[in-house]
Length: 260
Image (tube, rainbow, N blue to C red):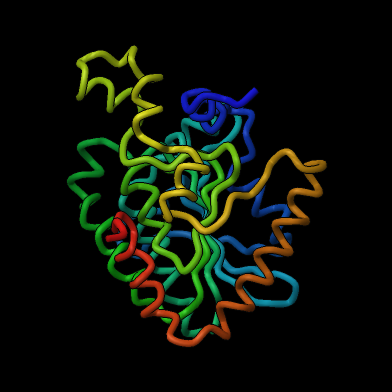
């Protein structure tokens, strides 16, 4: 029996779900974390650094929610502050200098919503990421592993290829927020989830992503092994792809266009 859109949302939000660091530890065992945005602070909601994948140097950036209550609170439940996005951008701007492709693991309900974050330029930080990622001259692969909420997720998803795990979601707003705005009742979140077309299957059909990663095939270790193979082969292909920047630009310009 297929799951409803809201059931998939709840699965994407589960505290038992694999987090960004779970993927990093299995896919990039030699990962070396780097800290700070060189302006204000280090944001634990975004983890980034260097690693190798089958001998290929890569830059890895992951949103991290944590598993325990204390860890999730410390990482603000995966909602990044502006310094997190600036840290991510700093690491991404390093990548072309050292000929490293970029792998982003996206899992956030949205950017941190607070007075301090706004005072430190939350909107500008996200906008700078969107602009800079469009012109970074290195392969970029973004994978939505859980929640993909609004501009907070898009700030790490302007990529040559965007994938989603089978039970991940990608939406401009949460179902509860959408229901509150449209019908003044957050209890209608289930209805809103269906309208938002936020599942991986919806995103694939609408040309927002290139591929869905199945979570039902084999064991957890087999999932990581399958993902490692797909990431390595895709990055190798993107490294050889001509006119990559123009294709990235065209990819996003084409989203939402209807055939005549």
